[in-house]
Image (cartoon, rainbow, N blue to C red):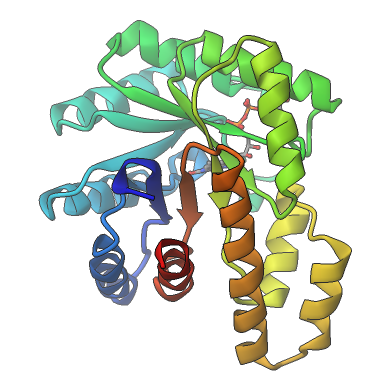
Length: 280
Ligand SMILES: Cc1cc2nc3c(=O)[nH]c(=O)nc-3n(C[C@H](O)[C@H](O)[C@H](O)COP(=O)(O)OP(=O)(O)OC[C@H]3O[C@@H](n4cnc5c(N)ncnc54)[C@H](O)[C@@H]3O)c2cc1C
């Protein structure tokens, strides 16, 4: 694998200690020479400044950086200002998402804002800024949890590409077949942009179960049972997780996946260990 097909995701730190820790994490992961780093964005604009600050710091260090941009709860005017600001800083790549409102926002009707779905955001970015940005969008091999059916979900994915997305990053998953099937279904709809698998290293059982419940990722039974059987034995969880996720990455790359996008949760260790095994 080369730097051309490998990317790394962070979230914007909320404290000075978090910022310091992310600098150290980044210094380690930069040695792997990823193609770019991406930085998440809280829906409703909650982390907008944190996202921009982190992106600018990464760019100052000489790396390509892509802010995520979500549209739910935002107005056209707000997003126009953000796009103008990103352009003024020479940012050329975005990860465009609908987003999910934080739980503190209460029950919000997603249909009431100025943007309902990510395809509308992609359309807006293209209308406002032409070809300035390379646009990545999200894809869901195991189906987005709010979709009515897998078929409708892949059609909705195709809308984002038709609106002007250049490539996609998937939600994380542990069933390679779900990814290959999704790519086949997208190709049947004439969607031929690169669909890069999102990879979540396994380091903590409780956290993994919580995230996966929220985003609709299936933890295969055999993986779940083994992780549960290790109890508090963090070392065994890490070792098993490393084996499982490295094998998943190998299977994906051998099957033709165009790259890998690592969800690091601002930790370097697991991604570096997987990467090392892949290049050995
Ligand atoms: C790579 C990646 C990065 C992410 N980063 C962030 C982040 O930084 N910040 C954040 O808040 N969230 C982030 N998320 C989470 C994401 O915001 C949620 O998964 C969200 O629920 C859906 O976003 P989307 O852009 O995929 O939505 P959409 O593509 O809009 O899809 C959302 C749902 O609506 C349906 N749908 C889509 N278009 C239509 C349509 N035209 N008509 C009817 N139904 C439709 C879809 O089938 C799906 O069920 C990320 C997800 C991924 C995969």
